[in-house]
Length: 313
Image (cartoon, rainbow, N blue to C red; front, side):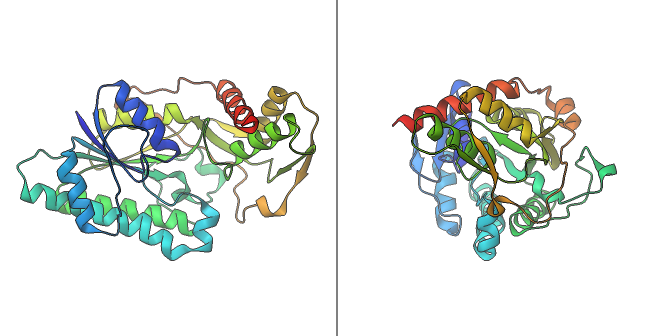
């Protein structure tokens, strides 16, 4: 089996590439310096580059992870986010259609990694979130992902492409950028433990409850959907369990075993933040047999250990 992975050098992309390699896939990595194997720089604004990547990869599956993923950056520069996340995805879809028209190769499955952000803030009665709910994006990142979903499903219906949409909820793991909440906590604690910072630990809204999965369970879901998901369908990739962010911080502090002073940072608060957000993964489970394998406590301990090692270097 052959795979084309966009965004292969990103946080999730690196884990996905390792999982594909473990299953014996041949992989063409796109989107940044690769950890190993064939690598192509890919500009999603360049239709010619997309055509070249598809011709080289001749993929059985395309895992489209490349995106601008950080909500504050999307708010700061919405047009660039729309260009990358929505228009880049549209060019990829039409590039696949053109590739099929000029070759005798088989239809590849295009797995698109969307986001639970598309659901927006919902009334309490609508949780856990199910795929049948209509999108209500509240920021440019969410809007870009909702638009990309619509463009891809339009290509599935109008051009006959084999598209599956994975709506991922919060995912965490070693190596994630400090811009994200759990990685930020772990990195701050590691610097305190190593003596590189004072005891103050800056936080945002600790009372919010979110649906967290280890990144390795996320990529396992992507592989399962590439194999067994139904074309033209949307699947939540989530634990189905809301966890207070305060509890994640408590677990990390216990792992660090250092005294800290927790301080709220207004810059880390998000507007229109929902108190509780979690999804229903029944559709994913029924289609693929997937289930989470990595307990949250284990994931948090490994995240802290990785941050502690990084703080020492």
